Length: 109
Length: 129
Image 1 (tube, rainbow over the protein chains, first blue to last red):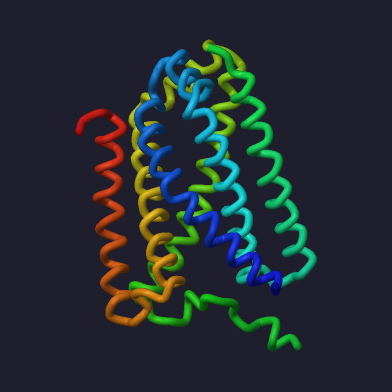
Image 2: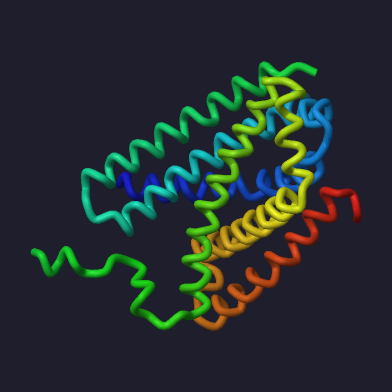
């Protein structure tokens, strides 16, 4: 399979998974964003929100990195700058969810 | 070669007349970048909870302010718009709604629907419905 086809399939697959997760997260974000510390910690540290939030950010960063690289493809002329920008986004999309998941799994009530 | 380098890149925003398809396309990209930034900030916010209650209070004061609430409502819209337009894109990929008339109608549905979904998710999240 062509690498561009694979990338397109990954984008479509991840977007289909993200749609219900985004809706779930949005409703929950609105309900906790101005709550007290114990309530917010409880949201991130208890199941099923802990696992759902983890899955949400994994797919969100995976999807975002692939789609942002499409934006770079359209707007950045220079190949070197484009490659550097793509690599930076891919690295960020791995590190950010990893740190967040480790962080929320260490949260205690 | 120089002439080639000076050619405009896609999607030629400054050349073509604005239509609902181009408006939604560029908005989808801008909103996608905003959502990426917002999710990154939410990740930082969730990790910052490890620093304890005192540090959390600073973020809480901001989020309880008018600007904080406004940001959350804006985020509801950017998420809602992205969800609905992504569904539209997935329908296209499955071969539905690709003709000009239908794509214009679904485009308008996405714009109106994003505001309806924003209000719906906000009210649902605040337990008002």
